[in-house]
Length: 175
Image (cartoon, rainbow, N blue to C red; front, top):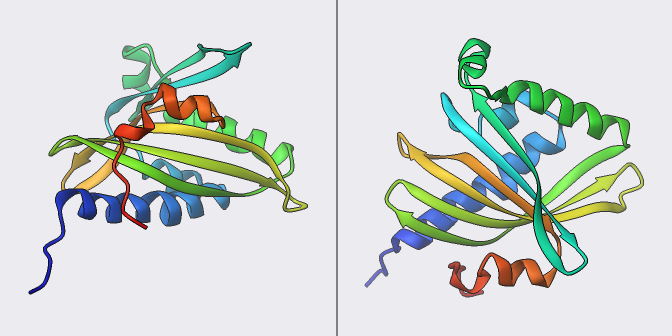
């Protein structure tokens, strides 16, 4: 008798491929269009960057973005996602960026069309040394059977982050 895959196992497989293969390759090659393809089109995208300020994790930056045409971005009082992507990738080029490595740590299904993915990523410089590490919770929406990012919350790469995001409540396969 063959064991049937659970919804969590299927979702894990899809998101593991999305984050550790596809997104990692697009980001590492600084492929703007490839990277943008991971975001929900015609949707608002919120990015929250949290920082550890002396033991207290506080929100320090909020980016209100829109993935669609520039006219709609202006109407919605949001920054076009493509402009943010161009600025980010330009900054990475200027700081000697070489590649990224993404590790999917856990997932959480909120319902059939909404999920969370908890990931850790490292950025490497031209000498293959890690110069930046962070953890992030990605909020995803399922559209036409594919998962797309519609929110990102980034945090320092610390064990305190695991407690803050309630990592224990995320599903991960038995290894």
